[in-house]
Image (cartoon, rainbow, N blue to C red; front, side, top):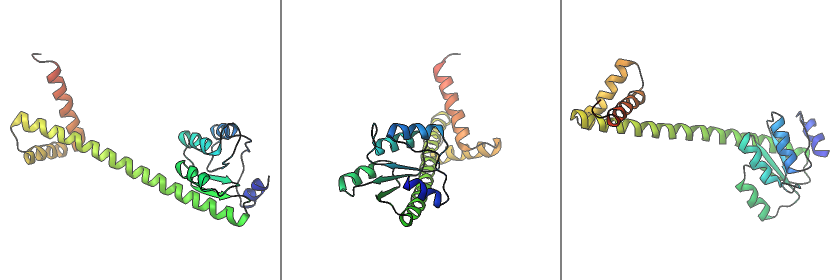
Length: 182
């Protein structure tokens, strides 16, 4: 009740209170949340497991509360998707900054995740282009540079990305290899 009052005093809307970790997960499924505050020691499912389950389906900033500053609890919290850890009792002066920090860390996590996904995609695209270059080099007897320039030229002529042209070459090679003599 005290935490709910503090959150409301800070201008936040509390959509529900959960007595167990399982109830917290269900609340997160039923509502669109922008933050979850969980106790580390909740019945049925502890706060760390509930945080993992919530975060797996709906990534949001999560703050973990504990009556303990025991290194074991803190270490367990750092493994899960926890963006802030507070030791009870929590004051209004602690809660506001903790929420701000959790949101900022979550935004950074989301940005890094997006950058990592973009880099993974670039790597996959590069692999496709390299395979297509190899096919061109073998089929046409081109050097690596000439094969690359051929992909570039086709990309410009067809107004498609190089990776799209490369995928077309890979598909064509698969068709030719799968059906010899047709």
